[in-house]
Amino acid sequence: MLPKRTQKGLSPFRGIDSLQDEMNRLFNDFFSPDERLLGEMEFTPSIDISENKNEIVVKADLPGMEEKDIDVSIAGDLLTIKGERKEEKEEKEEDYYRRERVYGSFSRQITLPKHIKREDVKAKFKNGVLKITLPKSEDYKEKEVKIELEK
Image (cartoon, rainbow, N blue to C red):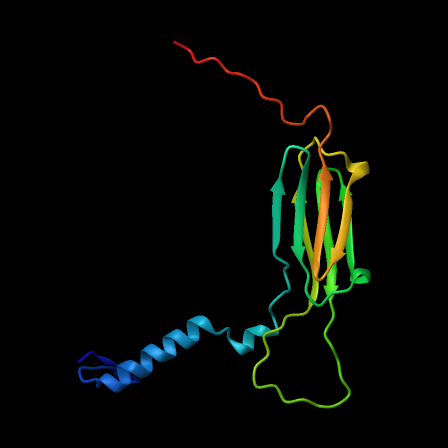
């Protein structure tokens, strides 16, 4: 038997059923977002950044968005991805039992290395994924340099 929380303190008696109920509540609270906070959540797209010898590639997941709602720019050494995921509004009233989809404006900034050919950057948006290709300048492309070990 484990102590049970009561309004006046802990009780030394607790059945296995109440322990199971408490465990279920803890798991549900941990794995389910609080509905009161969902209205305050912001939409932040997930991104992947990869690199090969010729370019850096940034991919951002932007499901449910349209090309016209996305803005990509470079200023100085910052790549900025901005956009807005708009909420679908219908005329009829709906009662929600659970609402987890998040809407709103977002802005993600990524610091770029100095060796990017900014004039040749390309961006494509297809099937909810934004792909930005940032070519490296010729003088920076990976060159193998042999480093001698000191004795």
